[in-house]
Image (cartoon, rainbow, N blue to C red; front, side):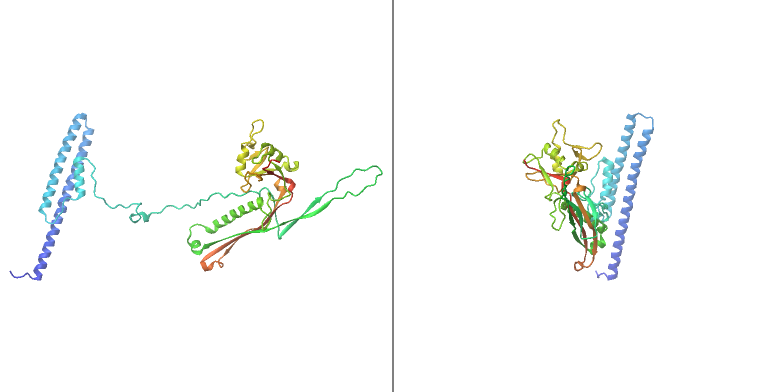
Length: 405
């Protein structure tokens, strides 16, 4: 046989493709017809069931008719499945019935759920299948642990100055009045003397570097938050200085001043109820009326377990207020006060507005410096404050020492 020309080969290829396309089209039309018949059968069952429910027939008769209808539909489904296989066998190049059609037929026949092949579903748990399209809500709230500090400033006397320090005139000694007779010679009542108490100011500082990118791209107000952080940490440093400062580049602390008197606890390791009563009466009565106890929370716990001879707890609350008191005087918590230990001073009592003064020279000032850290593409935020603190009237307060005598 002569070889086929290129045109003949191309013609045969076109005819073959057209035949395949025609066969696929016929198969699709026949499968759609079968699916339509199945849908109509399902509808027939539903309609039949509704009709039976509305009728006045007995339950037994209704169940019998439903059973007969289901058997008829099942038989029709079996016949349709056979017809589909026959159609497929007559069409070359076709595949078996699709899983979806088969699952539908099986469900209609048995009523059991059929597992379909695994398919890809858009879901949140997979970033590439929809997870990237979702994002959590970001709250404007910032969670922060509580920072504790000693609240001495509200208790003390506070004043401002425009100078490096302030000086307060002070009486340092007094004379004594003398008795005399009708014509007795009087002598000078010497002793009156004055001095000067100087309270210097000291400087607190802090600085933080933040990258320009962080400032530019952040959806959180970093500058505002930084101001709050500066204020909080300066409050912590102040409180520590007012309680335990050694007066070297910082305030003089209440517990450091050597002129403040003290009373023993009566026990080498514990606080006693008798010692607290002694402490209460140590300052002069004019101070006691405005006095407060200052101690740590742990010391408050220890004192809360003490009772009077009548069985009444020594530490209580003032009526209708959250304020704790001992012998009627308020108790203030200060985190910088010493813990209960041999030789320590865990409690101080007195009128702190009379005993201690705080001098403010420069309030908290924050400077935005874009130059100092420019080589690291950052902005430096400087914060500073100038203030001083000092005991000016030691007799107004008294400390409790853990000691026998």
